[in-house]
Amino acid sequence: MNENIIARAADILSKKRNNGGYCTLAQIDADGYPTAATISVSGVEGIKRITFCTGIESNWAKRAEQCNRAGVCFNSDSPLYNITLVGTLEVLTDLTAKREMWYEGMGYYFSGPEDPGFCVLRFTTLRYSLMLSEQEGTVRGII
Image (cartoon, rainbow, N blue to C red; front, side, top):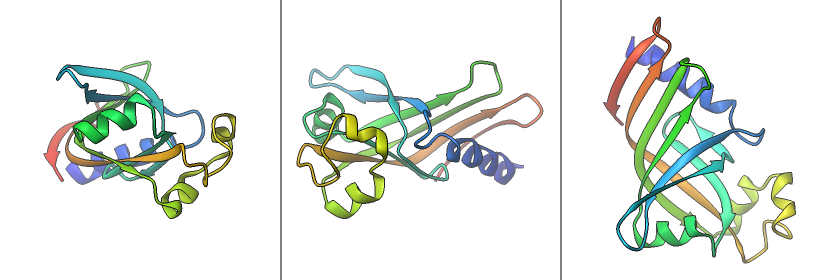
């Protein structure tokens, strides 16, 4: 059953990338307080990795450099699912990662993947809590 729920959660997340899919990214700020904000999803690897595109000077990138602990939450408007992931966040500035994650919408903010102000945030899941409709159930675990 757990494998089915994990596979279903991965399927839900795969539909979130580059098409207006959003989630909440929670981090620790410079004063040690939690902060959460909505961010669009750039890439998904099951429930194991989620990537986001942002600016190197953004609060998200600055917070990740100071403290790499983070949480990500995806939820539906109705009680169909709540996918909460806890893990680490790293800032990627290498051109390969930037080219791989670049999508058209980023052109509003950056000149292209080569733009030095553009970066990728890569979230790696360490543990999860997945609630998928009452019929499918809830599962918690460690990756």
